[in-house]
Length: 170
Image (tube, rainbow, N blue to C red; front, side, top):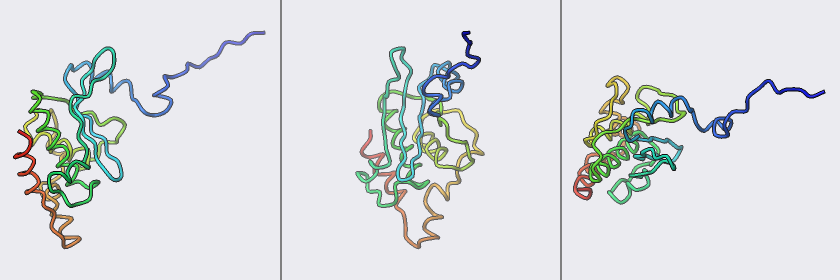
């Protein structure tokens, strides 16, 4: 006797835990480019991605590993590096003519003051218009690396890297 299955197989990326299709659909309906912020243990990735029917197109791609070219001598996985990565991504996006975007944090849990929101703060400070709540952004002291300076006794050159990015990316 034949039996009918009573469950529906989910899409592959949903089964693998890589995509939340409800969030993705809501972001695509906005018809704005997405600022995709991905935080890894040793680096931070920020991209400007736009939807196309044949597949998403990456317009701007920036990683915290690129900060070495601008004089960054700190760790690539901290909040200051995340801020600078967002700032660099924002400057590159403005250079390509993108003025506004919407934040896409993927499956990351939104935690107030986290690295994902440091990327957002960097992009907003660079000049991109991204809807956000000021309460979620990390403090200026944290973003400028002052908390790391207190802990380690070593100065991070965040302000000089920002000036270097502004000079090189025009």
